[in-house]
Image (cartoon, rainbow, N blue to C red; front, side, top):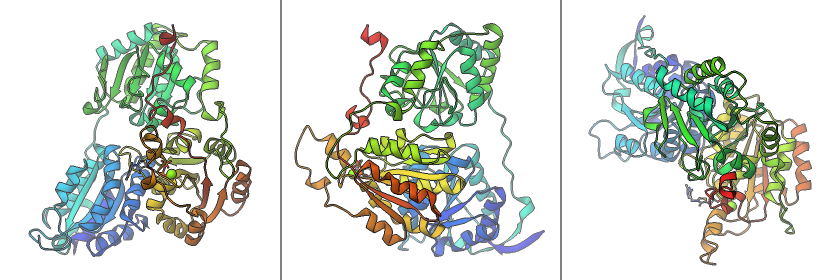
Length: 559
Ligand SMILES: Cc1ncc(C[n+]2csc(CCOP(=O)(O)OP(=O)(O)O)c2C)c(N)n1
Ligand SMILES: [Mg+2]
């Protein structure tokens, strides 16, 4: 049935009908009608207090669900406020659609005017726009399909003059997403992979974000090849529960896990970019023959040369290779010896790695604290980390239940995204406890979203590793200068600030004080718990390794 309605309303209904999962945003005049139309069509809306927070929430929500999250912002300044979060989403290939108002064509004297398409393109997101009233529905549908099918962050500009026009809208005639067949791999390529794995003595299979839906196939392939399993940071959680799986590769790996990976003779990465973090600047792959499987051509060989590149769907390639291996060489031991089994169990988690705690009066050792929290927080959790010296504590010490239980918003390496990211991931998974670890600097940059969390009644745990400094900078330049006034701050009472927002709060100076967290867990959990952890400020193990890039001792280098 055709209805005569405003373009803004038609676009909201179109995006809703195509499957928008949730809309986050800050509403101004330029996105008022379109956002209301989404809400009227049944898409839940979360109002954040700052556009960057909304962008991070939409990004994390989309990552956790694989669906298209929507960010809705006002034109010009609403969009620029969100750009850091949009850049993070674009770098992570998040399926996200940004609906932004725009000034009318030619209205360059408007205060809100900027060249939105140029700004969006400059940060690596995909600009799109509605061009006219008659093309608006098709333009909006195309933007949605691009985000969904190409795993892109698309910014759809909606000029305010076009939004107000009336059109004949028929909801049943919205263009549907084209059907895409999963790209397969050539039998020759799979043959080469099978030959390599069939001859490997110490194979390792890596799962990245691009393999999130291929966990069972990768586990089967690794079993057939006698391989160890491990993930990149973005894939963390994918192999939880597999006795032959290490937790995480790269800068966040434990030292004994890094040794096991560096000793691999064949390493096959599925949907993992093998960037400088994942490989510790190459140190984790000193001699291995490297195979990269990815369904995006531009991902192949982007960070390092590979010996065999296969363009294909992770699950399809892994399943074909597993079939062939199971048939050709059943019962391969490979890397799966009893001695390696014991090493994997000991190497998997940071909580099991020994360290000498720092004893400084009135300050807690962040490793002791995070290990204690890991032990008492329910494992049904969704963990996010922020940047800075302390990023590895929540990022690597807190165990996760599966890949959807972990969100690492560090593709742009911006600080300040963690709090909003854990909220987005938590909204997507309401049965899990959201837990975020952040530095004081990162937290104070974006803490305004505590207001949103309190309004939503989110029972989540925010651990602020508080050293009253930009500790990363202090540690990076420690050998060079002692002039750190510009990155140190007077003590901030973060617990008091959090209480002001309506949160529960705890100050922790000693690990025994985590009892307060136990008490909170037993309570109603109807608001955030913010922990102001007064920590001893020393380089984290990640920072001490030169951001995690230091070489690894392997059997080969020791010999
Ligand atoms: C948006 C942004 N601004 C600045 C930086 C540079 N930077 C990286 S880490 C850091 C310090 C973060 O301080 P805090 O959150 O307290 O963590 P800490 O390093 O003290 O553990 C800064 C300023 C950045 N990465 N992103
Ligand atoms: Mg700090």
